[in-house]
Length: 113
Image (cartoon, rainbow, N blue to C red):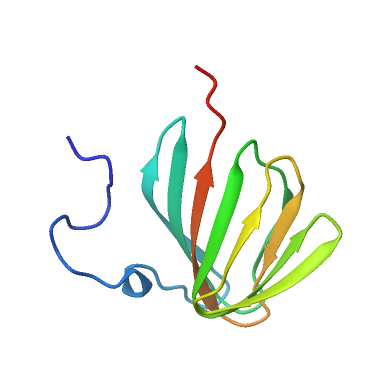
């Protein structure tokens, strides 16, 4: 059984090359998703955004290419390639692409067993 999906196993690859967005798009590719964890790659074209929303889990974003703007509660963060930010569970947040960029999102959900 494979727990990680949508990418080849036992092959060296670059996650940056796994998603690309055309103008006016946000493209996502889910690599893993269950009750405890979600891992998704995103490619944003310039001017796109994911509006304010909340999450039950802690969200770790890592910018892989370009630069993204993240609003967490009342705070704004500009992340560049190679930088990461934890957006804590329960705090509303949004993602903005002032320029095109790519990111990996890992969300760790609470153990509700």
